[in-house]
Every structure is written in structure tokens, then in C-alpha cells.
Image (cartoon, rainbow over all chains, first blue to last red; front, side, top):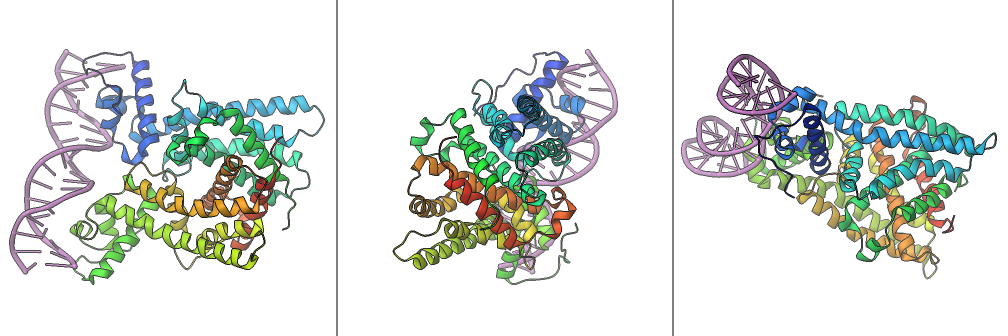
Length: 223
Length: 223
DNA sequence: GTCTATAACTAGATAGAC
DNA sequence: GTCTATCTAGTTATAGAC
């Protein structure tokens, strides 16, 4: 609950100050949403001066954009890396749908279960990606995912040659929703029955997600 | 962009004032999140006095709780109504999985496409249900959905007798995520390719969701 | 690069007149 | 029930000393 606090007198290198601000802001934005966090909340938690935010990020929204970028960028880079590996491995043949799905799902779930990092913060911030109001943040989030989705859509189209592009569009949305919401659920552990907390691990969730979404993507079109 | 504004001098009945505040707050909370909206924003948009919020709802968070309750309650009531109808129709037999799913999915999608009401607001507010920070709001949302999920979980268990309760728990999460995220997508139409906006209708989305989630729920457990 | 100090404004809440 | 007026506290942002 108590954010790491420091005597205001202490001094840090500029790079360290920047880092401390980003870390504190990430935690607070994830917890309360950008609108409900003041720059004073952030500077207090980071143990730096109020003016530092203006110096390093110009405005509060500039800071928010950086926070979300720092969260999304490595995640999506890893996804594209895994997708490349899957396609290379398949050679000239069609890649397995399950492998394409795993390239999308694994990086996020593993990051969400990595208790060496602040996984709780990651999970909540992930949730905010979908609901932060129309600011620089929304624009950044949209831009970064658009690129990713285009690349994966092509892979899905190849793995599911019988599916029309419109049908595929919606099914990919459903897949993203399932992934996203299960991550959020892990973040809000109050919602999890005690029995299930024990058996909750990254590998299990990845496999469950792959099985569910692969079946959904392959379903025959009419009811 | 410009909220409906009124000369401050105009007078309203108490019930009307209450209603106007709820409507304005709903729109603004959906758009920006509770934390980023001031009570002055709300009273200006509603054309009522600042003190009116305190009189009718005691605090800003009391108002927020009312707003979310007013959104969720009729939706979940309708879902339970449809589920009752499905089970009655099945008589002693197992209900069709697709029918149970439709009881869950139809009310939300139809409400999200009802352009006589402010469907945009509903879709965004739905998104906020998952991400509003730990306040009275989160408690209200959780409580209302817990009741619904318990009832539907039982129905799913009966329709899918081979699935273990743990497996079912996760698959229902995936289903809820798919539903939820596709609603949000309809709200943020910028994300929709122009071609798809034309063919977007409630019936089509309901059928797509039912087909996808039914296949996911029925998938054989191991990969 | 970092801090103090402060400008200029907005927040939620309420007392008391009407 | 509704409004005006006001309190106290907190807001972003910046100028200028160090």
C-alpha cells in the first residue's frame, strides 16, 4: 500500500529519475487509471520533485504515453519474434493454427505470471489499454496493436484458408477478448475461487487458451 | 461534443433532476472514467446546480455506484429471464448449449445496438465495468455479476456434463471476454474497417459469438 | 538537472438563504 | 429541493535560484 518513499533531499542521476517516475506512474496508472492520478501522487511515490515530470515528459499525458508504450512494445516485439519462428519452422507448409495462437498468447501470459516483475501492475495496465479515454494514450495503444494485428491476421488467414476475411476479423476479436479478460481475471484474484488459485500457472492457462480459441476459430460458420 | 446545456435559472422536479444527473454522469463516466470527471462537469452537462449531487447521492462515488447499477441491473435481469425460458422449454432434457449461450449474449448485444438509446455510452460503460479502480463501483459490479455467473455456471455444467468445474471456470471466462471485447470494439468504431461497418448488425454478431464460444466450450480438453 | 516557490485554477463538500 | 457563496485543499504548470 505504502509507495516506496524517499527523503526529498536525495539526489539521482537524470536517467534514474526518469526511470523512477516511469515505474511509479505505471503502478499508479494501473491501479487507478490515468485520470484519477495526480502528478503529485507520482512524484511522491517516486521520491522526486514535482517539476521533474514536466522536465522529462513535458505533460502528464506525455508521461502516460511513455508508460503504455513501455508496457506494450516489448510484448508485441516478442510476439512477432515467435510468429517468425513458427513460420520459419513450417517452411513452405501451412503453419499449425495452434502454433500461431501460441505466438500471440504466450508472451502476455508469461509476463502476467512473472512474479519477479510486478505482474499485478502489468495485468491491470493491460486492462487499461482497452478503456483509457480518448487521449494520446488511446492513440498510442491503437497504433501499436494495429501493426501487430495486421501481421497476425495474415498468419491466421493462411492457417484457416476456408474462413472469409469478415468472419476471421470477428473471430480474432473474440480470441483477443478471451486472452485479455483472462489476464485481467488473474490480476483481480478476489474473483478467483480459492481452489483454483493453487492450480493457476502460466503453462496451464496458455494451453487452455490455445485449445479454446483454436476450436472457436475452426468452428463451422453456420449454426 | 457539446453536452446538452441549460440556463441555470430553469427549474426541474426533484425526480427529473435526479434523472438528469444520472444521464449526464453516465455519459461522462463512460467517456472519461469516474476519476477523470468532476462533479462540476456533471452538473454543467445536466444543467443543474453543484449542490444537487450532494443532495441526491451524498458523494461522487455514491453517484457512480448508482450509474453502474442502473446499467447492469436490467441487463442481468433480462439474461436470467431468457435462461429461465430456455430451461422451461427444455423440460426435463438437457438444454442446448447454444441456447444457454444466447441467453447470456443476446441482451448485451441488443442493448449495444439499440440506437434509440445511447448505445455508444452503454458500450463504453460496459468496458469500464472491468477496469474502474477499487471503489464502491468495483464492489457493486462484482456483486451483481457474481449472482449471474453462479446461475449460468450451473446451466453450463448441465449442458456440458463432461467438463470439469475448473475447466469450465476458465472457458466461461474466455466466453465472457470474447463477448465483452467485441462489444467494446463496436463502441470504438475507428477500429472497424469501413467495409465491416456496413454488415454489422446485432443478429449477426450474436450468431458469430454463439458459434465461436460454443465450439470453444465443447473443445476436447487436451491439445 | 534538480529544486523552491508560487501563479492561476479546479476539486469536493457544505452552510444557510430562499 | 434548490441555489448562492464559500471553505479548504489539491491541481497543473512554470519561472528562476542553485
